[in-house]
Amino acid sequence: MTHRKRGIWTRTTIGSAALAALAVLAVQGCAPAAPATADAGVQHDLSIAAAKVVYQTYLTESDAAAAQGDATAGLAIVADAEWTQLKGQYAALTAAGTPVPRYQYSAPRFYVPAQTGYPQWFLVSAQRRADTNGHLGPAVTTLLVFERAKAARAWTLNGSAALHQGQPMPAIATDPDGYAVEASTTDASLVLAPDAVGATQAAVADEGPANPAAAVTGSGPQTTGLYAAQAARARAEAAQGLRYQWLLAGAPFPQFELRLAGGGALVLYGMYLNTTTEHPNLVSGSPIPVPAAFTPLLAAPSEVGYHAVYANWTYQFAAIDPPASAPSAKIDVIASTGGPSYGHAY
Image 1 (cartoon, rainbow, N blue to C red):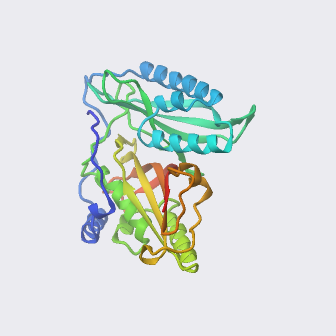
Image 2 (cartoon, one colour):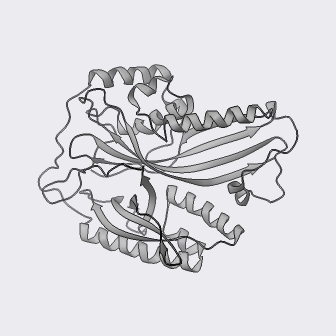
């Protein structure tokens, strides 16, 4: 199976009625789980050995760019969600005069789908530790997705997501040659078609457990937890006479899916979290503070939030989409990494 880019989806992609229907299908079970095997004789245009070289090359070049504080070199080897996050990070660090963080990676495990043609991609799980002047931080299991869109393009790291605390890496299905088994974006054997996972997560993050999507979405820091945190922020801003809104929205980044050994799929995707703090009806009023993390992202230091402040984040997520046949199964967002990516005040 060859991975293809997806279009942008928004929160309005799946309405309440459609989500309710999805919930019913998930409870009833809409299809038997497909076997987690690949067809015999599948060609491997990207070998596991080649993926290891790509990974090691990235680590070397990324560390060199960080050591030199070279944003141009650092951004040249990333794309999509990773590029958007890193661009914001470089801007913030430069403004603060802070060295770029360096990391050490260990115990990598490679999940390379059997692929022909382009684009090509693979997943690595590794233990990542922040390296601060030789002092290593705690190990965090991190998922890294690499892609090469065309033969004429270089490999890039397209997204990374840290497994949530206490969450083990799920077992990935492999074919007889040890290659990972790719899943389809429209797989009907799962609780949700993988291309609906992000929109369903967003429905809960935006509207909370009352949304019908909660029937097929597990609670956690990036679903019900995200809603609770944003709703609390909205109440706090309302007490100051301001209006706060948030929207977890689709992004034009590729999505990737792998079959799990026990059934289901691991879905990797990026999204935007867009937030606005404004005076009611956007009337001019006292300056609205710009969050400190977003000040370096303003187009001009002179921007002042007399009307509104926009502070947007970019996230990379990984979620388990279980078999539809599993009792009371729900999607589970198991990994995430986010960072400021856009700021504007006027």
